[in-house]
Image (cartoon, rainbow over all chains, first blue to last red; front, side, top):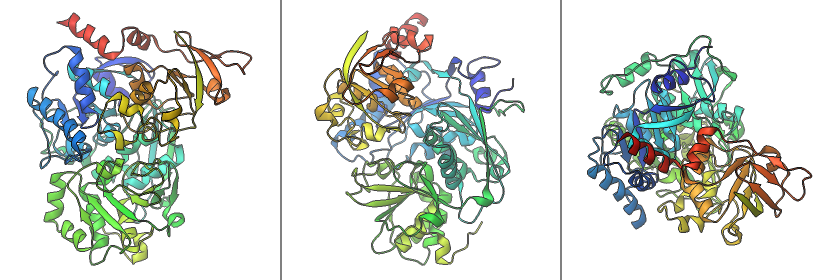
Length: 425
Length: 166
């Protein structure tokens, strides 16, 4: 029986010819990641193992991004633990305020992840790097601590489901809409314990930024990882970034999938996920009109240059509605700088947006955009659980950056088509 | 080990934001986490939960974030065991790693009601409810995970492995 893409990568990292779904294996990891919430617990647990060094100082990365710039004294102490550890254990890749970014935007950008890698991170959205053809998955702090010491992690080999996309992408539809529609179809546990393999003719024309967005939200379907085949677009992205060797794997033609889904893009319009699950999706035509208080554009899901570019296209020469607070979070300092040089930041600020330094802040209700009771936010982030962005009595609606920008102008959930805009490629 | 405790019921897809909201994640202190455990699913839970109580929930328990603070909060609140038809995979790993007993038992999760006092044998996975004629049987843990748990969790297991290799 053939192997899926994820099984191929896992077998290679376990030193095996082949693996089977459900098999428990020990794998070497190419990169181990934690942030300022999960890192402190991992550091405490690491200290109990009794090793003097991390397994490889080039391959352990601690990114303070959730509650930085430090939002309060306790958060400052957590971020300081990361900084002290990085210094004391001579970690090669150290990022901090001024050089950092949201981890899942930052690591690919800095060339720290490549095709064929096995990456674990103490952050559930570590699955983002599947966009590069890596096997990449979230773990907890204790798993991460053990990997920091040994460079290894145990996995149950996942079965896979195959998601094939074909047809013509409709106006204002991006990777966000494809993944929201997919989660809406299969549910928040529709790929539980599984690998999601994304493929099809519509995927091969999809930008790298859109692929990151799709892989990022595999966890919202309960998946262990989401993964894309490596193609010219992937290779173009890693060119000049990735500083080490990589291996390109592909699924066997006779690979076995436990489920196969096909999506016709001719029939998918921009999506909005209603409270309180990412699977609670509706097309924009059914969602339009709902009034909102805040719009957030950014996060590890949609804080990349393509996302800011489409927002600026819509906001250029327009004003944010007086009843709306629009907050924009570029994913990294580099994305911020690129957006500045392209004139995107000027467009956003002229329109009345607040533009923030990179942070996970509002996405998880940490800081920089918390909602009051009864308030409603439209957001390009990844979760809309109860209390996700603030008061348990607030609401979060998920969408792509184009819908977010148009809605910020109109003061209600709306498509850019309502502004008479046409999408430019 | 056998646990007897009062049941608190929760629905499907209880996410980690409901178990411990991110607004409390500026610390990993167990007592602080316990004070807000399950707060966004049931605001009164932290004040009414008693040591030894048992959570029985719906499918996909612990979905969302990788925060280990979620099982830590439940454990620190004194909850002796969580029973659900299925667990989100990161929560599942985290619970095993920190020593919070969890059992996958679809029939038990469906049948057991809030307020019942049930008895759980963690070693065999047998769950006895006063309202069910027969005991329920949870899915057994794979041998490797039993080995991990017997070693005292992943850190103790890793410590032993590292010292053997030294």
